[in-house]
Every structure is written in structure tokens, then in C-alpha cells.
Length: 455
Image (cartoon, rainbow, N blue to C red; front, top):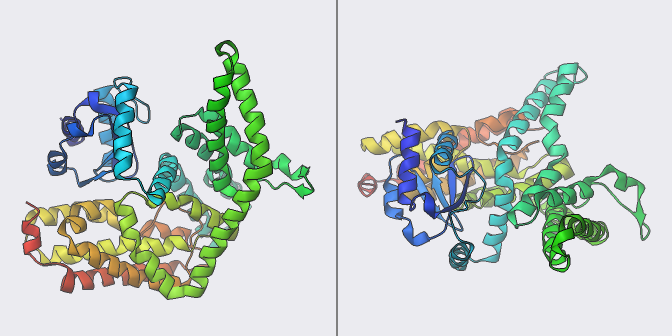
């Protein structure tokens, strides 16, 4: 039996078996399992399972197994249980699921966390496409900056292949938003299409010319949520025999009109306020702003809320052709690498050394969860020193005003996406952050007795 299959079976055993799964999905490092009865989950045994780097208790149980491994483990879970990734199981009654959900929500019910969690759930399934397309765009930009003619056919093809998802992102965001809130996904996709339809440029309402894409992804998400809300309300009034005809028709008519007249103008003002505000903070705050943002980013990653920032990055790219926020936040993962190397050099604990060796490659690639849950967070103090090291790197990136033309990656893979030919400056920032994380952790963050508590 392969290790990934064994890990999948161990996870299933400790979460209460396939009968306790409502649905499951995964992101770059975590298997996210929506359980029906949380009391059936043996959390201690799950944490102690070989191959599990940590768990996060939220609306769903998030089991951290690392990049690459997560795809194989999820596939095995699907094969073993017969539950498709991202689809609901029919094994669990709705009432039991609802009660469990409500209990978990009460434990984790803060408005900001709930908002970021929902946004994260919308964008997590899109991450592979965003990452792959971003790398293609970054490579093309790097070649163009190196003097390659952008009008060459193969360069134009790269532009199409890398840019397609970003040009039509509102559609898939609308689809996922409707799906997340329990509506018909295609209606959410239609909401996204309405917000970006080029034909809007030829329409004037109440003396105001409409603008395709105005309001950005925030407008698309809200319009898709309205589709879900009105679909449910309209369905209550429509006879079942003609539901399939009139419910979607009236929903599109009502929400489409509200979107163009109300949602887009409000979302446009909100989006402009957020992007201009962040740009101003980074422009004026410089090193100080970079230090604060990078230093406090790791706790967001720890809670699994960092994907909630994705639409902000995208709106910064839409407004300024680049996001200055991403290189700063990327320093949080770089500092984890430095802290882990310091622990590896200092410790004599073989188990800890093996965990670090396994997690470091992902860390250099900008994937910090294996180091967070396998090394720094269980040890305690190194997590804090990693945050301090991140502040140093964030200050440097903020001072140098580096920015990225794409999202989805960080660490070393972000280098090709850096704009204004500041590739080397960003790399220097990485080295500074690795060094800061190493020094602070080596001298102040780690004592050998900490490893004894890991078991």
C-alpha cells in the first residue's frame, strides 16, 4: 500500500469514517473535510498520524498534509469513500448536518473571520488555475523584458494561455459564489458575465455610462450572492411544474437590473476605496507598513484565512497592473524557511530534523503550511521569531516598492512575476528575510527542550 493511500485511510479512520463526511475538498496543502458529527473526530490521533503536519478546526476540519501529497491523498479518499471531491455526500441527513454546522459556526463566529472564510472558499478551487496561468504570464513578461518580440505568434499564444482566466475570472468567481451559498452555479456565472459584458460600454442608465468590469470581483461576488437570494425567494412563488422556466428567468431579470443600477456603482466605489487606500498606505508607510503587514500575516495563514485576500490582490492588479501587497506578504513564508534552517542547525532531535528536511523544499517554493504546522507552531516560540523575521523582510520590500503582476505563488517562484525589472531586488529581500528568520530564531527562538515536547 502506498504511503498516500495509507495516510488517506488513517485520516478516514480518525474522522469517524466515510459515514461522517458531508463533503470534502482540498487546497494546496490541506484536505478540507466537512464532517457531520465533530464528536466522532479523534483529533489527538489525527494530529499524531504519520504524514499529518497539523489540523485546523473551523467550519470544516482542515488536515495539513503538504503540497503534492494533498492531491494524491484526496484522490484516495475519493476512491475509498465514493465521494467525489467537492461534491456533497448523500450519506448524511440534512438536519444533523445543519445542527453540526450551527455548532461550529457559534464557536468561530466573528464577522471578519466569517467573511474571509467565505471568500477563501470561493477562491480556493481556483488556485491551481491562477497559479499555472500566473507562472505562464510571468514567464512571458520575463521574456519580453529580456528583449523577445511580443508580436511573435508563440508569445501571443502565451498571452492567451496565461491571461484567459484573469480576463474572465468574474465568471468562475460568480459560479463558485453561487455554489458556496447553495444556489444554482450557472446563475452565479451569469451574474459574473453581466458585470463584465463588453456590451455595457454602449449603455447609459440615468445619465451614467456603464463600464464593463466596474466593481471588479467584489461586484461579481455580491451579484452572484443576490442571484442565490432571489432564486430562493422566487422559487417559493413559482409552481413546481414551471419552476425550471420562470425561476431562472425572473431571477436573471431582477438581479441583472439590480446589479447594473445598484451593485456595480456601490462595488465600484468600495473597490476603488480599498485599492487606493492600500496603495496609499504602502506608498506613504513604506518600510513601516511593510513590516506590520508581513509580521502579522502568518497568523492569517495559520487560521486558513489568507485566501480571503485574493480579491484584494486582483483589484490592485486591475487598478495598478501589479500588487505591491504580495511581495510583502511573501516574506512571511521566507522567514519560516530561515527559522526552520536555524532549528535544523541547532537541534539534535532526529525526528525534528526529518520533518524540516521534508518541509523545506515547499517552503522555498512559497508554501509555508508544512513548516508552520510541522515545525514552528508546535514549538511555539519559533513561530513568533518567524513573524519578527518576516517584519524585517516586509520592511525591505515595502521600502523598495516591489510589486507582482500575478498572484498564486510566493517565495522563489514569484521572481518572474516581479514588475519593473526588480527581480534581483525581490530576491535580495528573500535572502534578507531568510537571514533575519535564521538569526532571530537561532539566538532567541529555539531551545532543545522544546523538541522534547513534540513526542
